[in-house]
Image (cartoon, rainbow, N blue to C red; front, side, top):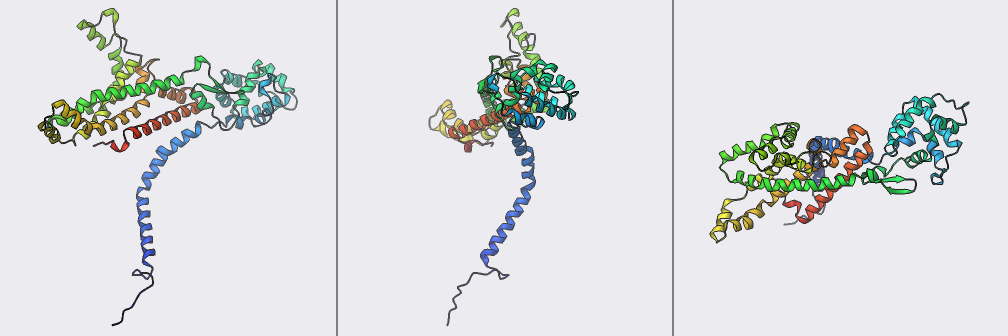
Length: 423
């Protein structure tokens, strides 16, 4: 009986090599899987990645000066701002030409507002000078150096031109320097004046108070989560409603209620005076300071700590504790050596959640924190909604994001992010 040896490639039913057919089928499956998650990827892209990218770009974008004053920026490059002498006529003529175009496009006030972030008073200078510069004629009204100084004496101030020259680059680190109490100057990087050094104080306060709030939530939330996990289902469900009740009330309403309770004539002080624990003239000052912020935010964020811990504690078998006690362990030893280590993943999950939420809060600190209890997020909100300095707000947000990522990395190295569980 003869044997036939087949040395060629194994073929599929349609005659193509089996290896090629399997690779094609695998590609089709991958494409189907990609199409199924494509809507989610697009949602994440436009709701999360795109805004972060836009924020990072705004923190270095500085094209306003170059776009509004292109001729001025070009000739100012050759001017030595550190000499103490004013620019020559060429700069003034180029500036007048740029301003005439900018005034027609109504861009000069936008430019003034941008430069006002770096040097106070430039916004009003551009706004007031714009009405008079509009009347100048490039053909007949020279020399423009004298004309501009006649319009406003600040055009004869070297510092005004230094500000324009220093901040005429398209991409700048100035916003980040301002975010850490530094500034760009013609001579290089310099420290802000003492009256303007507030950002680093706010960063330190935000991180410290967020850690305090997280610690308070752990101390208050752990017993509640333990009780919920060890009660019968009927009683646990009733108490869980009380834990979830704050979610059904507006954040603004809860914060306003704390403002009423914490003030010196509020509920807490009145009760303490009635009990004789505090004198009428020595009421506690627990509003418009860090204490008020910690109390209010601990109450608001406490459910976010309880829920992860409760879900993890539900998975801990009671038989473990009984086994430890049967081997001679006391209640405390059984808890500390057996129960607590198994609940650490819930503490880790709740701590990360509460900490990240707390550093981004600004409504509660704004209402109950006063001058000593506000966070860096309040400053970000101020620059976005009031001052219009979006570049600085973006830089502050980027630094805050970087700080969170560093702390997340440190937590992963010390505890291990794989140990974090939600149930």
